[in-house]
Length: 410
Length: 169
Image (cartoon, rainbow over all chains, first blue to last red; front, side, top):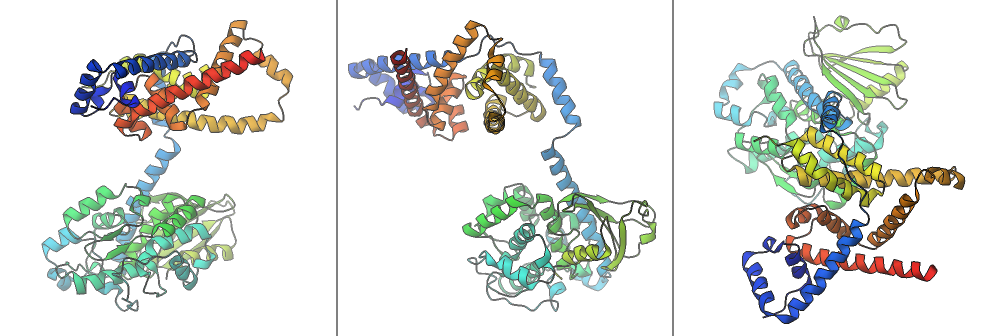
């Protein structure tokens, strides 16, 4: 029988033999009871162990009297009232997704009239199980179909984002890091198609390809023709940007997987119900991480997730926020004529705040409280059948420039 | 069902301070950080508070070390030797001896790899092998070997320093 190794001797001395498999622990005990060599070694190790403990004891501070526990309780309670930055950010992100869901909801409604005939054709099962499924027909016609490598999982090289950015009007003016980061995320599926068009629109095309070609039983829900409830839109926005679930079970899974770190998912290729998602390969993922670390706050990306359902529905407009600027808050608005309005506040480079108010069609921009004579410029622009109100301490030209950045995809 | 935090606090706090002290080498800071870890635990109410506390404490100490380093660089230009002496003036003779001993242990601990040091300090703070394994990323079966190596290095480094002290003295 072989002798007991040094590590096991220490485990024995530390009373931690039972952390080893039972058979192994038994073998060690048995061996130590009979082997003189190991017994002698055990005593050496015991001396070493005691010596180390004594050395460490020399570095202990004197009597450690804990301060009153109630003091800590009080501190914890005070902090509950003033959540830390991380928690605030998390709440903000949550609020953003909820509010954007509402925003997506009204945009979808605003863009299309309900079509009862089509609705009837949608099975109940399909509607409940797959309401977030992208609308194939919605994007048809708006985008040249370039199907080449949609199903090919290898693509997504780092310069896809740049190719897209270069080709999309307006994107070149965005602060680079954030814009590229998000572009790359959503651009992944077009890696091989080489087509330059808004990434989010591509998603719909990819879905269509799969729905038509590979995955016969995919329920095709036509978002453009269904009155999409806020709840449904909420689910769309709340899901992982890159994954459309087909069934309720998949939807659940996607939601459960959502908090997983995006990096974990990087370099993985996920075949979802309606499309193939090609995540960035490792170098691309690193690049993504780097570019993200440089600037873009996660909330911006959360905001841009709203692009998906909106673009899928065939609306060319892309974003509720100006890409690359930190989103300070996203809030729903209430009041006469403001139902469904969304207010987005973003941090400008000079520390000032940019205010964007998205008003759904049928609402009245004049219902908005006027700028309080504080020298801010206000612009009211028609957008998506509704209105976009832009306010900031900046020239009209500067404001227009920012708004153009928002239209980068379309 | 509900955890007796008060009890846990009494039993773990001294271990936590000892653990932290060997990382930040300042008893007051160690106490502060231990309290901070507990405040966070009260906020998050982790399921396994003990390992959680040590994990948080470890992270706090690491952040602290970074901050201290920054601050030191900052102060290096401003601080005169006289000020140094003034700061240490309130310490009685006993305190000075204690600090010297701490310095010796510190040097010895610095001779260990980060993971060996972490395992040793966690063990000394009363963590079990599985808990140490979880926090350091070691396999449970490797904790004994790691501790054996850490103890040997510590003893050797400590002795080596004593040797140089004697030679100098």
